[in-house]
Image (tube, rainbow, N blue to C red; front, side, top):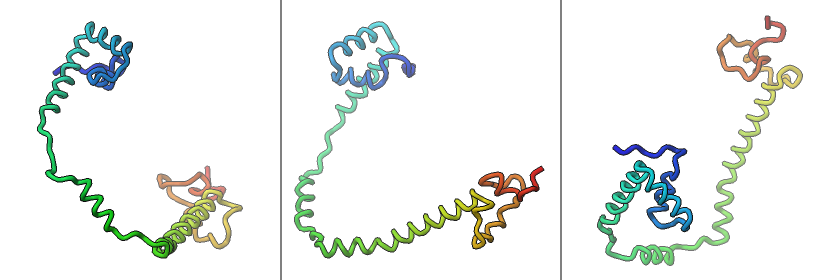
Length: 154
């Protein structure tokens, strides 16, 4: 197996591929050609790329036997076009999902902010969340205040 050039080694794989395909300007192509003459690893890697390119060119060309573009254009021509009323109805169909998603995000942000803020920001209606104030060590905590009751840290 041929040792691949290291990442800091010049030229890299994209550079060798561009050299092989003739996509480089004259100065860059000359620089890579000079490097290939002095570096047997890169020359061997280029030979592998040339063999791979030749193998791809030797593959048979597959054809469908018919023009697929004509079939697609024919289907597009016969497809029903959405009317303005249909587009309005489609917009309204997604509205309940959007409202539900917005409400759940808002509730999550509100509950999370009251947990993180702790103490003064905790409203009486959020008293049920005080269950999470005293947790055994090792549990997941948002902050130090949410894991231990005030005054119990020693």
